[in-house]
Length: 237
Image: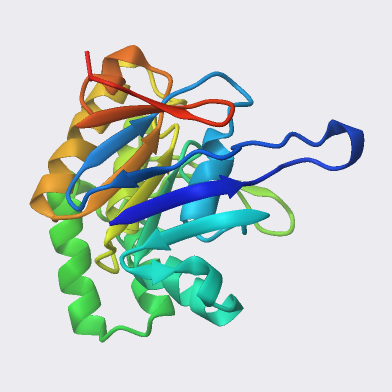
């Protein structure tokens, strides 16, 4: 599903630039949940951005679902991110003024999916993540040019469940999650990770998840730790 061959990426500029990952290679099989662990600065987030087509490696090769990302122009990368890769962020990334159902439906609106198909898919996904009874509730938060605060009706764990449902909206082949439980307490984080694992199997998708939580690493099929010029594989605890 994913093949990473000796990519070199970087983040930051000037003297403060950090060059990571550096020369790591690995494969992720279809239907796997693979966790990336490592110390801060090891390049996990950059690696996820490279695999998801958000960033371009300085050199090396990345293949996703049979497509060499280097062969895609900006339009092709946009379509990849819209249709074949789903992203789950630590900060949830929901639109405060939209309901849970409307947030889940956003990717399908961008694809101009049939409204009836969209509504059916939204209902299915909210049921899948255990939020069928919360479709009309809003995540809340700051929104708009005046930074108006909208009242929140969903807990942090519920918001991350909405984010998982949204990531699945366009039936992606690959899910990329960067510290998806970083803002949640231990119990809620474990529940979200267990849900993510169940979703991988029920929706037949592949997931690449960055986390430093040892308890969550134990739920992965494999654990990879990128280092300086190599990648180490660990058995889940």
